[in-house]
Amino acid sequence: MLLGGIRVVEMGVWVAGPAAGGVLADWGADVIKLEPPAGDPMRRAFQNLAGIDLPSSPPFNQDNRGKRSVALDLRLDEGRAIARRLVLGADVFLTNYRHDALERLGLDWASLSKESDRLIYAHVTGYGSEGPDRDRASYDIGSFWARSGISHLLTPTGDDPVGARGGFGDHITASHILAGIAAALFQRERTGRGQRVESNLLGSALYTIGWDISLQLEFGISLSPGKRSESIVPTVMSYKAGDGRWLWLLGVEADRHWPRMVKALELTDLECDPRFATAAARRENARALMPILDASFATRPLAEWAQRFDEVDLWWAPVQTPAEVVQDPQAHAVGLFVDLPGQPGGVRSVSSPVQFSDCDTRPRRGVPQLGEHGSEILQEVGIPVGEIERLRTKGVLR
Figure 1 (cartoon, one colour):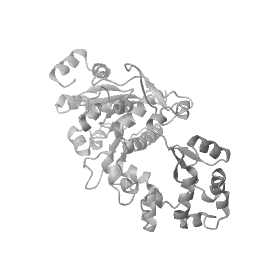
Figure 2 (cartoon, helix red, strand yellow):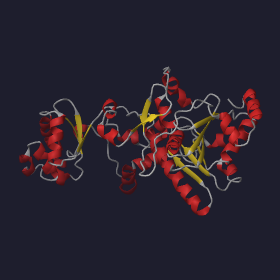
Figure 3 (spheres, rainbow, N blue to C red):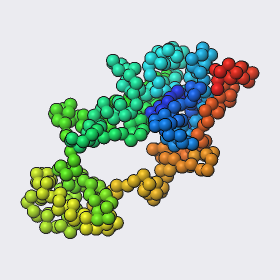
Figure 4 (spheres, one colour):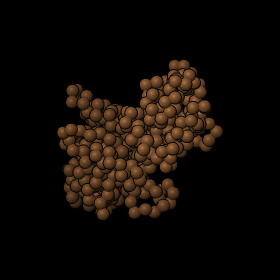
């Protein structure tokens, strides 16, 4: 196993922290999910969000498979002491709690680093570890989507702000903290010392739209979001086929791909038209060109366009619905879906985003029930069975 022998204590709720823990579990780490007595609220995601009572939470299942769960009441001194004991015995402590909460619990980096120089402290935050908003509550729709400018950049002028898809920024940020954890583990192999690693949702968002932010920083230029009808790059554009299906053309090298495009569309006379002969000319005359292209695309169904594009090596992709994606033969061919072990009736989920030639990263265990592994985890750190029962009776351990 890729991370066999690595123990991670994850004290995370909702998405960004637990998503990173889920991938670490897929990669072979022993991930202990430390939950409050009521559990991670993501277990009841749809109930919490909209009062919808569903028998399962697929987003929770994806991000928490393969872990072991222990539920402790950290409001109690004994609960905090056990949590500290678990964390100090781990290789990695992964959390997305806010700084002020971690400080109250004695689980902040300043406190833990005094007692362990090997611990890798991985912290996912909304806005970072400094500044006036260090402890501001944040979900990805706030710091990643709205405050970063992403929602604005995706909203056509005059329209209402575009909403976020669930977990969009969380999963990107989880990928970033995963990279940091892997680098810190590698560095510890060299030096024997752990360190603090942080990734925040706002920073992940700015990196994600780094092209736009870099233009703003260097030239003071902000590319205005626009409607499709206002596009100035017809070789990288969505088009509607005659059967109502949409596709995206991927002609990012405009002058290279333009001859292939007009050949596939049987509009070769446009290639010599001075209004459209170069990328600059097409930009200047896009309002005249787009209706011509739209009319041509409407003459054939997507399947015919697909064949024509492939014949001339014109790059493209279909616009698919989630129902189509889960049937996509390419997604299945490269193993982008996995079965979750031990789930009643069989449950499929999305695989981890990285594949390895020598390591099987399919989940080895299913989704833990709240507190399912509490007794075995506490025994592993030397707490006797009788003491565990006392803690359970007292309400420290669920």
